[in-house]
Length: 447
Ligand code: MV4
Image 1 (cartoon, rainbow, N blue to C red):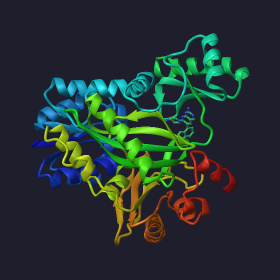
Image 2: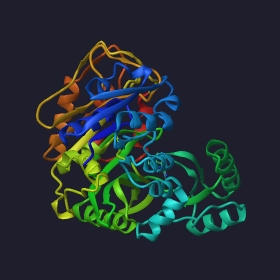
Image 3: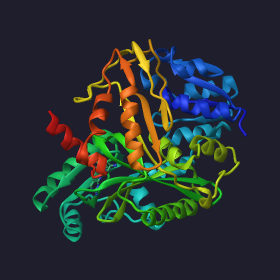
Image 4: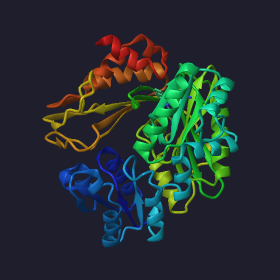
């Protein structure tokens, strides 16, 4: 087991990882920018190292400073959290070269999944169902026309170096195709320095369902069920739940089994998320994330398993603590992302939180690094906390969520809490009847 882990992140996820380390008796080091000197994770860590000024590229993204902080403190592993350097293959390689363990998959696995064409080709080879489309990059309009005619319109053109919604263009008919291909390629080249694009059938009303997987790096793979993350705005998830209201136990076991086998065959190590679009009873792979995700607590709630413990165990060579048959799904969980933003316009609202009171009681978890009197710096993303609610079934979970939202107090800044108080009373949400476009349509109507 590791002696000392350096946490290369901030906010609620730094605290989340720190808690896991404390439970496992592992010493903790945090790195922070000058803007985060008063952050909760800095106060709670055994050691802290200031690595630079507020802008992320000079601090949380500065690989040299982070490696130096490891050398100075004698940390033997790094947990990257999510965002920042968590999916940076070069960072994973540099740590390995310094004999420091990156708590995550190999640089090579990160690289494969970071290239969306390569990721899709790999998924297909491993038996994961993918969206119909081109087999690789498309450059010629003639070829694009042939593929689009074959799969049928509408089609979507995506940047291989994109992901998470960046660099996509929809063509409703052949008349749109040439422009869509040209703009997608030139935007991808400008944004990512890589103009490779690929074509897929455009699914019109899918849900976003992702499967939580783990590999032990030695040929074993397991799945922890799925999360439904269809409620998004501008590709930012707002509400996530597990299990998906759209799936039955048979579909869950089937897609989970396919994913677990793929992870085993890939020789993957650590936590991963296989993202699908789900429409008319079919799953279509879109991307794989090679990190722990913001919404991992809903999976923890329904399985009772600490996923950060598992990440640390696997990275230290101790293997997974569970076999597939030990993973049981219990009840329902919902996560609300509480952002320091206007609840209608989503404009960031940094400033001082004058009063912070979190709900409690059975089935309630709040992951947050803020406190009364904390001043939110304007330099980073606006997530200030997550409310995760568990119940024996979805109805009980929703009742508890409504009550917990009533108890939650965040004064001094605007937050997205009022949005959740509206959503929890909405009939479509109560029925689990929503797709990836539901939230944007709802917000457009409310204006
Ligand atoms: C799609 C799609 C429809 N058809 N691919 C957006 C984020 C990126 N991960 C993939 N995305 C999409 N890919 C095909 N073939 C629709 C989206 C999409 C979306 C997906 C998940 C959640 C919210 C979304 C909002 C708009 C578009």
